[in-house]
Length: 363
Image (tube, rainbow, N blue to C red; front, side):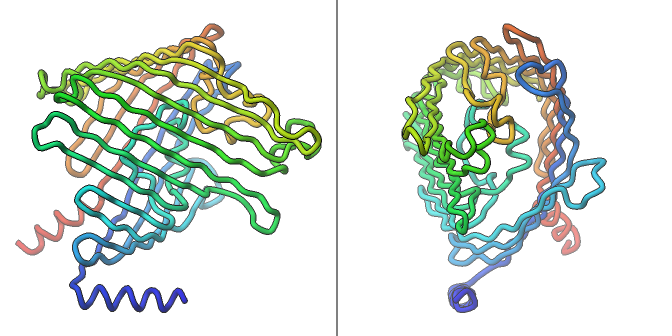
């Protein structure tokens, strides 16, 4: 069946006109976090990732891609630290986009809060397993522009053992009057049915499923239209940043939801590469079961376990057609500790490098 599918796709591509697509993504990640106890163990992450892709595109809108990624932590003797395949079909329209298969997370157009996903999650989990739909709209009068995104990611599980692990993501944002006003929201639902992992709570397999729901509704304003020379003009954003969590048990059924209601204020700006971003969260502690399951289970920043959490990010970002590099010094203020974090990320657009080399050879 798979061979037939590829044969039909290739015939379609040949008859309608096709082109080869390729990429050799390179990413470097350095992250050093100190004084983060009792919320999070101190750690240093130092790794590189290579993610080659090759495929064919036809009709100017559809493509079939195949590749994967290889990730290596510095200093580890085992190679690779982590690796996986990617294979996906995409259809790109004027307003609608869709992806099916195993595809890079970089195709996502939304910006999810750090309580949903922290930076190292994106580095170590670069693929989505499932499907994604996107919609983008630009009003001709520039009164508004917006997007919406829906993702189903079946990231884990075991059919033989009836283990089921998936997440559903949704995001949307609409900008009005050149972004002087914008409103948006993010939603994440984890369905985690794995009694082998959940048995770490000491109930000997009685806990068989854990539901987690994250939601973020916000309103904001940006001065980008007044200060177009800035990469990111001063902005302010405020909204709810909350979670719902509950366990399902064989003996007693559904536990009541833990309502981690909270709020967050964000401000930031960037000029000539230098930027600052500050986020202040206040409300109920999130990640209720972090002490039982740890950072491998929770993908967001563990500092959100605090009732009051302020994150100050000072950074410099250099960007051109080929390279994006960013160095950050980050301070995490909670009622129990002041943690510091240094982060360096480097990404190369190797597709652009190859295009420039081909152009120079042809000339």
